[in-house]
Image (tube, rainbow, N blue to C red; front, side, top):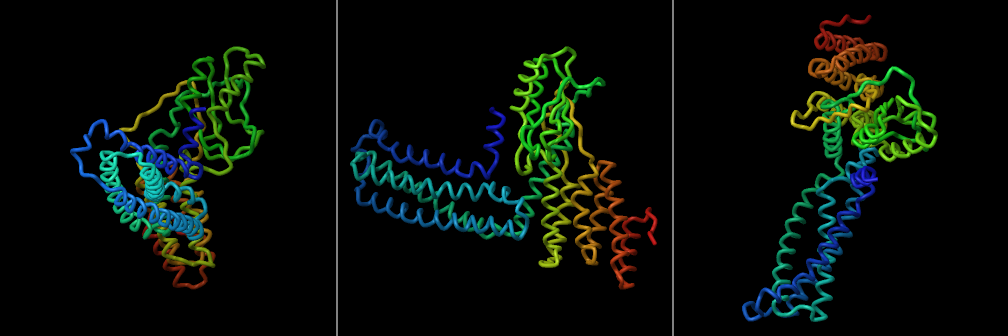
Length: 426
């Protein structure tokens, strides 16, 4: 239950309202807290702030923040739509998780609520002289914070929805996911799959993507029940109700009632969703970046520069995302997991790009250069081999599509310079 709540709170498409709601609660208490000052500050020691002065300040905040909030929300929606159309719809959740945008919207809504509640309390003569003075100081502080937030919001608006910003956010999420995978490819499931057949399997009740798994919770169940749990697939796979999520191995016979109880407990630590997630799925992160390049390379858009930017970003992700040596390593001896083929990181992301830029010389030159850099710098031999094989396919496709002899000669020369140890296809 707590695991699913944690994942739900991490989903920006579900909790976009959470920060404004918390800000509204804080603004309510903040605006009414000034009444407590009468117990600590004598009325004779502070200047007497008139109700009209405070009312004017609060009117300015309330009216301006309502307009700014409405304007900001419309800009945010337009920017998200622009990011989806210029990049890929799969980047929508990353744009929604932008902290600067969420903080600005929450601040404007909170300031509006603060001004409205303080104005009502002021009209009801809720505050004494000490309270009005504290409210005056609080309002000045709120104005100063709003000025800073508005200036920062203007800077954010200049980049919100931009294709470069979209690529940066996808790259950041991909490096984080791939770095976590490289830190511990087995996700901490260090046990060995038993040689005997599983006692029973746990299946999903719905068809969808296996997105999240709570290995710590599964380890606790396995240790308590003296079981071994094996996951045949990692997060990111599309499963139907006939595909096993977890194989349960037990040294002793289990009754139907015990099996059902264990199934229910295990399903509490697995999440099946309609769409894929970036959190535990590095393949999806690379696929989304590849989609940005595919759209740029399409004949309708034909944006070579953006295609090259996507290729560069994919290269940086695969080379620069390193495991964090200070990160905590998990150890779940009662669990085992079957890792995906590492070559999917190359084929799943570069193959669609190679197919879509088959007749563009500049993009194929950059593609060969990126594959060469990956083959020389990534630590995994599977990725180096996949990058080399992909480069061979790129050259063969170019020789098949390029009819102009100088272009054929140029791409062959680039391939020979970047991969001197590989034979030249005829």
